[in-house]
Length: 115
Length: 111
Image 1: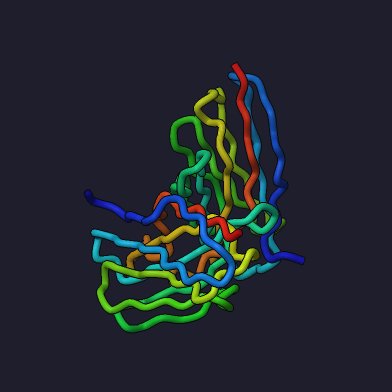
Image 2: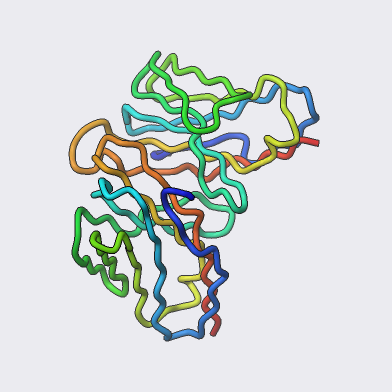
């Protein structure tokens, strides 16, 4: 399917466990992003990537790790999950140049609960 | 103070009403302004995109930017129950800067 796909859509885990959220896009967009969305905080940028093997921190990177070995995939890993990481996580992508370069297209989200 | 402020609502209106959603911002360098619509348990989707000041209309939706007041608005005419969603404003200074999002306003349109 064309677009941006996140998996799993729902995940329940325990404190201290490692969790990986997957993101796959079919447009060959250069830029990919991970956001978390929490009540009262809106969307906060965790990490982003300008291209394969290029990643950078966003506003709230602590406790998260990303990698981007292929342009189309951008997994987000919580190395040791904490309750404060209970949230809805959104992956997004955008083109690198042109008038729509800062327009984000979002996935459907991954709802993570850490017990 | 946040760079972008948005009233969280909820805003509840009857079907057919004109809805006004607003955001204020503090960074005078912002030139790109967007509105995203987010249905429950879905990802945000782009609704309106404007550059610099002025109005942009698309069907029942009008986006307005007032840079002198650092204020943007989204108007929805003849609102429908299907417009019930959370509306997020987003903005940036250049088209390569990261977007700064408002916290979103939840809108409910009742029949």
